[in-house]
Amino acid sequence: KQEVTQIPAALSVPEGENLVLNCSFTDSAIYNLQWFRQDPGKGLTSLLLIQSSQREQTSGRLNASLDKSSGRSTLYIAASQPGDSATYLCAVYWGGSTLGRLYFGRGTQLTVWP
Amino acid sequence: EAQVTQNPRYLITVTGKKLTVTCSQNMNHEYMSWYRQDPGLGLRQIYYSMNVEVTDKGDVPEGYKVSRKEKRNFPLILESPSPNQTSLYFCASALGSGINNEQFFGPGTRLTVL
Image (tube, one colour):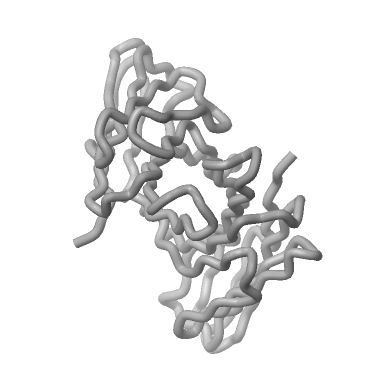
């Protein structure tokens, strides 16, 4: 069964820290993995998408890496700011027999305090 | 502006009264999908469509119907809503269903069934 797990469920850090959010998944034969940000009561904003052939993607202070063999992805946030406070979700697309299906982790709720 | 729109954004209704939540995208995307988000359960896929007139079930299709008669629209229909369908609903679209299917989400519809 395809499953996506995010640890920790919640994280609270002071402003300025570099931090890492984790996402693990069963079955390494993925098409891609996508990281999203969700503010309370709001929709999901796409942050980064890593295709199966890629090792990492960067956007500003965000860097996402992918290690298919170990079934893991990490989202690195540099120099965190209070505005980074949100829930971060990862979603895995396996394609193949599950073409069209997207599987989400339950998210990491991040609080960055001044 | 490229976007996914949903209407209504908020809806309170009563058990058994049929309702439709509309979803529209202006990006000429082939792929569209519906999700529901519940506390403690995360995001779960209801239905998806990989092209016009092609729809498939996700994880939790019971009690829902969809149609994809034109590319830009993908309405979600609740024929006889029940209180367990109280949830936050999201529509999403993507260019296709291949390895680069970055998904873009609408703002969400908060549904309460009394």
